[in-house]
Image (cartoon, rainbow, N blue to C red):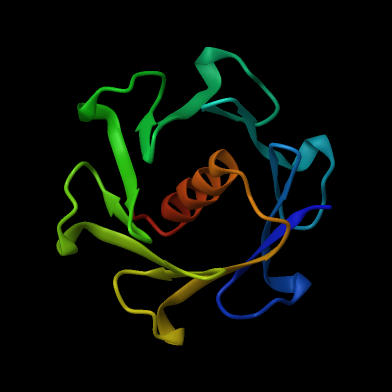
Length: 144
């Protein structure tokens, strides 16, 4: 079974952003290798189907996501704390990029439907899969 990530509040296939299946993320509804946009191996996430360090997008350490292969605080993109995703290392309210409530992801601190940018349907995501979805949504919305 796979997990589907939809844009906004709709669960229509025309609004499907990603399909997550077996530590792989695909664009839209097609799960062919040509549509694969991320490959997850342990705590590292790679672009496309590769697992080469030159294609590593980010790595995960606890609830923190770091650009590239280093877990240095200067490379920290975001972190998760109490259902909020904060840009960088600070957990101040001005750094909130997402608020998570059930299977819904909202931009900023408000859980108003007008701020909902995505909803998740299907199997529970692993931590690595969930952070990959957050990374892709943040990039799509120019939040990191």
